[in-house]
Image (cartoon, rainbow, N blue to C red; front, side, top):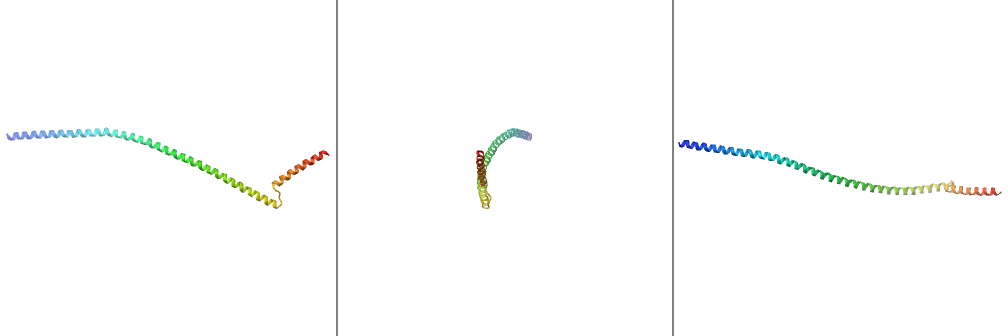
Length: 145
């Protein structure tokens, strides 16, 4: 009888232990299942949040890039204006120097031609004006007679 009672106690304990193990196993299973579902939900929300943050960052980066490009274009335009101004000044100085060189050349050529007895354009124009005056004077004298 002691054996039977002891056996029943052991069986009761075993049944109780198995029941507790099953209960813990079920709780572990449910906890794992809950963690899986929660990770899926939070993961989807986390991915949505990452996408939103990425879009905001992209907008900010585009704005910064546009500002930098605009600033660079402004600097380029400014530099172009300065360069054009410098080119215009240089052209003016070159033209002045060319005019001086041309004038000096003309004077030297005229001087050389004058030395060898060839009249200058000014001399020819002066003679032509005097001839015109003489012609007009002769015509008046001829009319009076």
